[in-house]
Length: 108
Image (tube, rainbow, N blue to C red):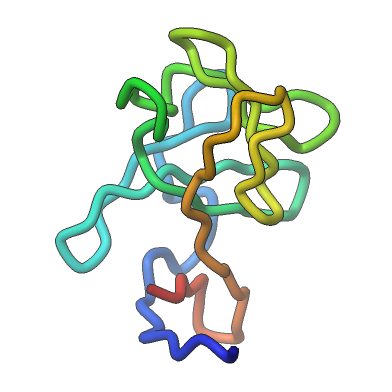
């Protein structure tokens, strides 16, 4: 099944996003809260809240395996596909990001 996305420009450059010391930021795109994670020159997007207890993921961190770690119960989710890799069975909504000539886009 191919997903149809509506693409939204969210930044001309990643440097304009207010990332915290863990390289996470919460932004609003098309009325939806999104958590953006930056690792080197890559960016990942996921739901702003943990699917388990709705903790804001911007308060967590990203580990070296490119997993976002929830600040509340330390559940870990792959930023690539949203899979819960610490075994609790939850799924984190992820969104595709593309860098284009005129900026950074997210598919919703």
